[in-house]
Image (cartoon, rainbow, N blue to C red; front, side, top):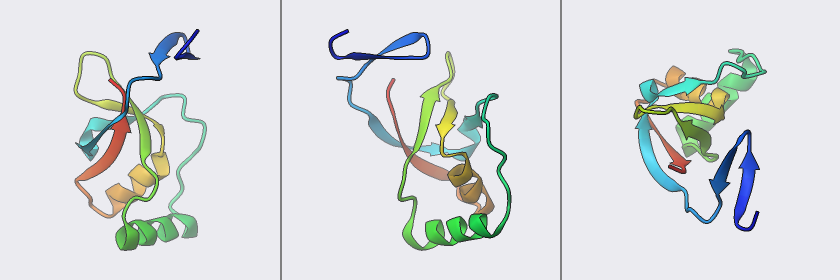
Amino acid sequence: MKNQTKMSAEKVDVKQKPKLQNVKLEKLHPFEGHPYKIVDDESMEELKTSIAEKGLLNRIIVRPIENTDEYEIISGHRRVHAAELLEMKELPLFHRS
């Protein structure tokens, strides 16, 4: 499979460049199989402080939800939760269509 990699049961063209855009938080949804519980603990407070002071240093990873303009969060659930606690309205993210 030249220039393609297999993710789940679908093929993704790795030549396609990710697009950077700001997305409203209400358009981001966790996936059902997310294995970790998000806890509001000291670590979450540290993450909130970091995002408030430095911005989002690591982008979240999302995939489009078919036939919508919304996205499923693949990685970055804690960062999204911290952004919600900070009452942010949008997050920058990279995605491939």
